[in-house]
Each structure stands twice: as C-alpha cells, then as structure tokens.
Length: 511
Image (cartoon, rainbow, N blue to C red):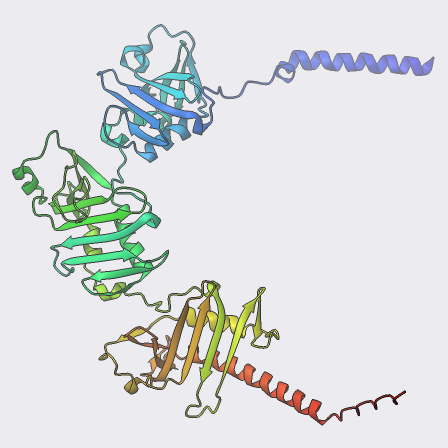
C-alpha cells in the first residue's frame, strides 16, 4: 500500500512539472521549425535547355544538341562556364527567406512585367520556370518567384544575377579549342619579327613529331604541345560581329587582309582549323596586349594557306601571346629524346664495351625480357635491376647539346670506333643502335662540381650529341655483371672437367 502511494505521488509530481513546462516554456513542445524552402531539385545532367526572356523583348536560349551546347538561332557555341553556372546554381536552389505569400504587386520586387523570365527544360520534357527580379535592399540577395505561383522569395545573388548579362557573356570565349591528341599537322606562315617565315610540323607517332620547315628535324613533344596549348587556350575578350562578307577595307582595318599569322591545324578525325592573327587591338582599359583574330573555313587542294572558301562571321579580340610563342628559335623545339623508343617497350639489350683510359673493363653481353624477367643469353635470370636501368637510361637519354659536324666526321668525336655500342630492340622487332664515343667538354652541376659528358650518336642519324656520362656507367654495370657471370660459368665448367668420369661398364659375356 505504501509503495502504491509513492508511485501515485511521483505521477502527480510529473504531471505538475509537465503543466509548468507547457505554461512557462511552450516552445519546448512546439514542432521543429521547417528548414529553408527548396525551390528546385533536379540532376545537373538532366538539363537540356535554358530559355531567358527579358522585359525588353530580348530572348536568349541555350540548347544542348548531340552533346554540345549552342545558342539557339545562331551559329554561336554556348559558353561552357555559363551552362555549368546555371546547372550549379539552380539544380538545388534553396530560398534564403520567404518574403510574401500571394503577392498583389510583384512589380515592387522587379517581378511580374518587369522580371526576367527563365524556363529550364529537362531531358524528360519537364519544365521549371521562375521570374528573377531586383536585388533586395542589402544587395546580396535577389527576389525570385517560381512560376506558377504567387509566393516571393529571396535567393543568393549568384543564383540569378547573370541572366541580365549581354549575349556575348553567354557565348563560349574559347574560340579555337580542340583535342591536342587529334592534331596531325601544324602549318604556320608568319610575318612576325623574330619568328620563322614558315613552320611546318607533322605527327610521326603518339609522342613523335617531325619538323619539315624551316629545318628538317625531330620536334620535341612537350614543345609542340606547348604551342598547341597556346592556340587552344585563345580566349576572346570581345566579339565583333560581321553581318555580311567583310569588305577589303574592313579586313584591312583589323590587319586581316595581310595577317601577321596564317595558321592551319589538321586533325585525324575532323576538318582543319584555320586562324588568322591581324593587327593589335585597343585594350579598352584592360592593360592587355590584344590582337584581332578570325577563323576561316577550311583549306583548298591540300594547301594549308590557299584562299579560304568562307570567312567567319565574327572577329575575335584576344591576347596576342601566340605571337611570342612563335618567336622562339626553331632549334628550341628540337626533340632531345633522340632514341625514340619507350623503355617499357624494350625487350632486348645488347651491349659491347671497349677498354678506355683508366678503365680496363670491356666485354660484350646481351639480356632478354622473358615473362617479365630479364635473363642472360643462356636463359639464366639476371639478379637486380641493371638491365632495366640500361634500357631506361639509353632509351630515354636526353641530348644536352647538338653538335653541328660535317656528315661522316666521326673520328674526331671518338665515334669512328665507338667506346660502347648499345642495341635496344622492342616488341615489334624494331631496334635502335646507340654509339658512345670520346669524352666531350665538361659541364658543371648547380653546385659547381664538374660533370663529365660524352659524344654520342644514334646509328642512321647524321647528328652528333653531347650526353651525360652516366649513360656509359650503366653500360659498365651490365658488362661487369656479365663478365662475373662468364667467370663463374667458366669456373663451374673447369670444375666439372676435373671430376673423373666413371669407367664404362664391361659388356656382358657372350652366351
């Protein structure tokens, strides 16, 4: 009975505490407030059209077709940054605040007849629409009204302020973009002080290029791609629309009648890109060095500089850094990786080495890559990483200096009878023979220590090079290890010869 009375008293006290909380702190029992209202929700990749209509009658529509965004009703490519901006800002747009429900005078907020009307079309045909109005008094938010509906909200400024920009702001400013891996040739005719009058480069492999003008030589992949990068990155700061075929006077005013640069890029999978660079353009306060540029439509009869069949309808004003890129000495584009064989493709290394001053080491040995294991000629695995180091050092040797020597004048450089010869063979059966000659002029490392160099050549090439002495040192390692193996094999054979052989068994007696 006492226990029951205690429970009853506890229950009464609990009820009194609940009543007190309800009276004194009603918010404790109030439902949780709703979070910010989500106005739109869709996946970014579902957007296929953006239609912008302004109160002055201007309409701009960005449309995706076959994976490319364009400005509807024009030949203009839509700006990737603008399309991405719409997707990013609107796909999960959340209101900062609810301003009014059932607004009777939306014009007070820049909405209604004064609004920019935006309609987004998704891949499944669904349409999402809203009106973008004026900034609020703080100028950090804009008024917006989803359509249909009468509720007005504020959203962050970055979500809608760009819908009032000019048509040019919706255009793609990179007007000469392309895939560098698809380029098969670069042809430039230039009238720029310090630049060669003619530059021609053709692709010879995945990372190999051949320059045929102004001189014949292998071109460095990094340097060619740097030039291609300059072209692909051209970005218009202004657009000048050409409503009809430009007159000779108009072309002359832009310096495009006799351009400073006439450039054609050929591709493996698409038509050529042809670009003219004309006179300097005013910077209009940007403090940039600009030039007039124009794209042409193709080339005729295989001539990259033939008269064009069609001019573009736009003149672009862009930075003229491309001119500075063309001013570099063509020899700076020379490929310093002259062996032109990837280390990963090498499956055989054969080396011969002659004794030289202060180093009596000599010999000839070869190794093969079988089932991802380097082996000697007799199939015995090679311990350590020496074969791999030789393959990498020789295949990727980088020329430090090109020697302009008369063709056939090899004795002077120790290449008439090379100190070392290394033959690399790849999986396709191709081979490259590298010859190492006499020591050349000593260079110094960044700390001022002497750094020996050696003359070298690749068999079949007329050029002579200066390369780092470390190349012959890895050849030394291979020959030294091969000699040790040969000595061990000879000792083993000698021991076997000293072991007396068992007498031959006597024939069984005749029956």
